[in-house]
Image (cartoon, rainbow over all chains, first blue to last red):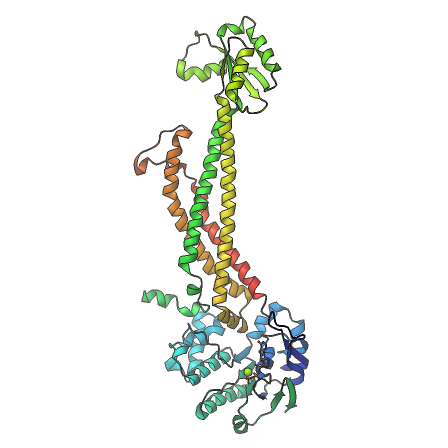
Amino acid sequence: MVRFAGVGLHYADPPGRSSGAGRAALQDLTFTLPAGSFHWLLGESGAGKSSLLRLMQLAQRPTSGVVEVLGADLSRTRRRALPGLRRRIGVVWQDFRLLPHLTVRDNVALPLRIAGRAEAALLADVAEMLRWAGLESRADALPAALSGGEQQRAALARAVVMRPALLLADEPTGNLDAAQARRVLALLQEMHRLGTTVVVATHAESLVEAFPAPALRLRAGRLMSHG
Amino acid sequence: MAEARLRRPRGRDPLGLRRALSARLLSGLVAAMALLAALAIAGAGGAAGLAARWEGGAAAAMTVQLPAAAAADGRLPRALEALAEMPEVAAARPMDQARLAALLRPWLGEAPALPLPVVIELRLAELPEEPALLATRIAAAVPGAAVEAHGVWVARLLALARSLEAVALAALLLVAGIAVTVVAVAVRAGIAARRDAIALLHDLGATDADIAGRFAARAAWLVGAGGLLGTLLAVPVLAGFANLAAPLLGTAPGTGWQGLPWARLPWPELAALPPLAAALGWATAQATVRRWLRRLP
Ligand SMILES: Nc1ncnc2c1ncn2[C@@H]1O[C@H](COP(=O)(O)OP(=O)(O)OP(=O)(O)O)[C@@H](O)[C@H]1O
Ligand SMILES: [Mg+2]
């Protein structure tokens, strides 16, 4: 499902400031995540968790090494083929990235509309997703009017509405209280039970103890342990 | 209002382009440019029409007129000889009597008995700086001749009309170029304002064609509307100008709204202006957005 071999990522220096080769955000990552697995992605702030997830969601090309997602080797895949792959990957971003001028319903419907799903067919799916995330009463609210936990669940509903094969969540419990965090984690576990490959980045060790699963541990851009 | 909102839910506009690509600014600028384009089109057409009309008059730049008797008493061949020796004269040809009679018929009626003067048409090597001076020299070279130089003026007007036509077409190209630039700048501003939303759509699997298409549809609509507005504003202005120019085309200017020469406006070109503007806006937005999207993986 996901295969990394000797993957490195350097962010380009901002224009004007050059420090030579650029910063190495990730170095020499090699691992494989089997289909249908659930993995934690652990590491301190700045360790490279979000960068690794960006590679897995095909939002970034690696500087070196091989990234293979959903059976496609990124370095050998044409740019034209990437949108189709991205539609099979659900992402919950660390900062949610809900569109502020769209209602919760329209935010959740966005991936379906991008995929060209017929308007009549998509509303039922969206309604079901909102019910699943406990947001049916907030469907017509704008994101700014939601609590942090509600925004988090809206982002999760948008990530799973396409029934993705791969689900990536970046700090999905970051600013939630314990009860809300458990609720979001339960939703992620449910997707895993339905067969989705799930990767959840976090630095909340307490959560990991409550939901034991294999983990990728990053430190300063390097993989410390796997499993 | 509420109904319109229901029919066009905001979810169809995830990039918020209805605000990011401002209708007032873009359509307003395009309306002004469409007005200019309409004026340029009409100007080019009008100048071409005048040029066509004057072309015949300018062909014989000068005429030399001899008394009717000249045809019989040998003055005509001598005059032709004298004229042929002048370097300014490229060709001298007596006008045939039938054509002369036809030209004079409106003034003289059917009067075959009337002796017609002999008229020699001159084609000049180049347009003289001082037609009057040349006329005097010709009159001196051909005794008893009356020299007419108005053809020189017609030729000058013809050159003026031709250059007006060229200037109008150049203005049209310039307006189109400015329109493309304005749309590109507006679209780039729209991209900058919606950078995050564009990046999100891209990450959710939107294709370049999808994102560029949303911008292009909006731009085409705004530019097309602006083009239509500018063209509509141009119509009464053009009718007024056409009326002012009516005497040049040999008709009397009309009075009142209905007296304006509506039929003489370049309707097909005017009708093509809004759709052409929309197409230009669409293509410019497509190119601008696709170019920008290439920076994303
Ligand atoms: N767009 C970027 N341009 C340049 N450097 C970046 C960029 N994004 C991240 N970095 C750098 O890469 C390193 C890894 O960042 P990343 O966001 O992946 O860490 P993280 O593990 O997700 O941290 P956190 O737990 O705080 O979210 C950091 O040193 C960061 O400064
Ligand atoms: Mg992060």
